[in-house]
Length: 119
Length: 116
Length: 308
Image (cartoon, rainbow over all chains, first blue to last red; front, side):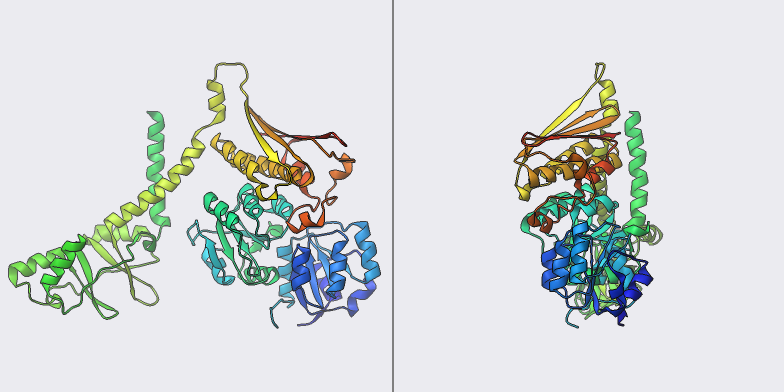
């Protein structure tokens, strides 16, 4: 099932750290979870929403180069100011959840956002 | 959830087996950052991670966690395996990515650390 | 002697618990020696003698059709002859156990029927998967008791008692460890040793866990950022104090370093699963007291205390 980022923000009650006007136009094709940038660079796919607890500026570069639709920062961590600034420039929405990665992924799966390798 | 059900759900292979497969696991946590694991993980939870260094075993040991599952087909280093055997941990490996592993376990009823 | 009584009771209670927890499949012998219905009683005599068994299942292909024991053998020698086939002397009504039944069911069946052994079958496939004797049960219980006993051994030393028996005003135990800087391969080894030593001393699991986590974070900081240093744990009545000292480079802004998420770790450290700015806040959360002193160019001294 295809969802927009806006629907996900509402369903998971995510805090929106960047400008909100991009959310309804962003289609989420799937999800990826990981905290190692090399892993995400190698395996995430275009259009996926990325679940991570990393907050430093490099996450924006990774999301941008992989054309991910957005980043959900977990555990209620606050993205660094430099990260948010870069995210605005690169048009990468950053959202925050107080839940752990496991719980955020669980809820995304309930919404039908999946990650099936090779599909 | 029983260890046996976790193995079935993730179609995991057993790398180090020091416990009965009927052992109960109450919670799960998925993370590649060990400080995060140390600050959140509760005893007897399952740790899902992509980190295969000896520090994954040390982290489990410090936090009283007995089961570690490596995701996306990662196989732990020889030293990691040796440390896990010495400490009586269970090491599993699944070809599923982190995202899919969390989703499947949740659907089978395994709760995450945020819910307690 | 009072102590041994307590342990005796504990052990018996534990054995009772175990026969409910353990399953038949954990105790059974998986290599089952069998005979066919057309074999002779002389064959049975030879196979039982060679394997020192007192009975075995009779199998027709994959199907279990009976069980033959020493008693059947004696009867056949007395009333017939040894060249007669097994099927003539075997017991056809075989009482079996399921592999996934708790061991307590097996114990009850042994008492009720007085048989020496039970074939074990899989609940779904009904195929023979093992055989269970009383000796198997005893062996299994002993193995598990030994594992439990090792856990008990670890918990037996209670430092509070230990300290109170020492004839002095105040007893302190000091444990010192050297930490190599930049040796990531070994990062965690010192905290692992410390944790096991504290367990041996009989400190409460929660206390040990908090000290171990805080020490592990401190050890990693030394490995990642310094040339190495020393970790010393002081165990005394009521508290454990850990002091971690290094020789530089020092922290320019201690207050900033304590903030969750603040990190100066290079990318390679982040890729190894650390350096996300959670180390010092983690240490703070795990401990009752925390003191951090640092001078750039000289070094850092971190001291934390956990009340026991």
